[in-house]
Image 1 (cartoon, rainbow, N blue to C red):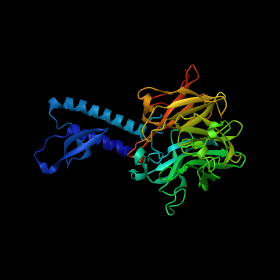
Image 2 (cartoon, rainbow, N blue to C red):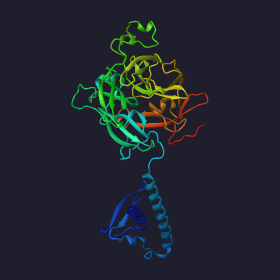
Image 3 (cartoon, one colour):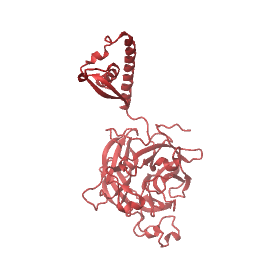
Image 4 (tube, helix red, strand yellow):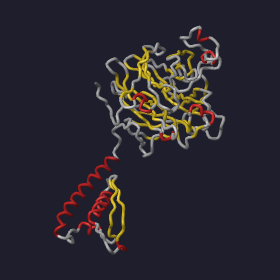
Length: 437
């Protein structure tokens, strides 16, 4: 803390204790001092010199002792204010779920629905850039789909997961062309980035959509740098003309409610999504499909740019979105939500020995107050902490339906119970590493 700031704090406190009502109102002013969150109102002699404030000789003998005691208390209090201010400028050392999380420039982190890539000793956090007025368009009124204009994909970097530097927009939206996939009026959601060791490229996949969410496309972009700029390659519906590996004869029946068969020629719907690179280097896309009724797991080509034409249906008919997938001790785990728009619902989890299934549901992983509403949040990503065994961070978004730009990031530790089920316990504050039970 600068010496001048300490002195000003001290002088303000002393003025509180030394000030006396004065009949010469022209020389006295009524001031309000805010110290450590407390507001003090006092009369201060405008003509008093700073050193006169410390002069107790003019006081009556019966009050001198009391004033001396009060001055000592003021000095101690000033020291505490200085100490707390110094601590406030220290790097963040704990996670505080749901609180405003500022980047290293002092601005709130703006990376919603995102995910993290660890590369070269650095974490890169990608997310939706949401800024501006929240509005409800006519086409989405039936389900309360409020929006802000699409701002693109933001990127932040960190070496410790607490302090994040804003690297700017890795993939900006396009303002001048309303027909472009990345136009401000369209949907850019759930961006995830993976690194292809063979091509040396960073590959971004995202949910690209029309304003009414009818297009349900996957968008792809590439870059030679983790911070971008990413080059947008276009969007599509995955796996056109391909049946899933676990298809049945009934799945191929053409009828009004069979969305898998309906979309077979032009490709399957793809909304909320995530990516996973397996131990063998193969990459997979998980996405909500069939009008959000069923999740698909789709293997990508070796360059990670397209579907490989191999995919399966999981959690069939369970209306699952916001998938977050990770691997632990040779098993695949999923944290996800139900479908209720921006409104929270009960989280769900599942496990599988093979990425295409079968997947076994494990129930709600959340524990603590409001666990039945996922702490009023929705899942977005699960991060294995690099270099730390059995340390996972479950990332959520606390959506503010009518003020989307103020939606908060909620990070919580993910552990496993004695039955091997993932558990996410609410904590007001926590830090890494989390002791294993």
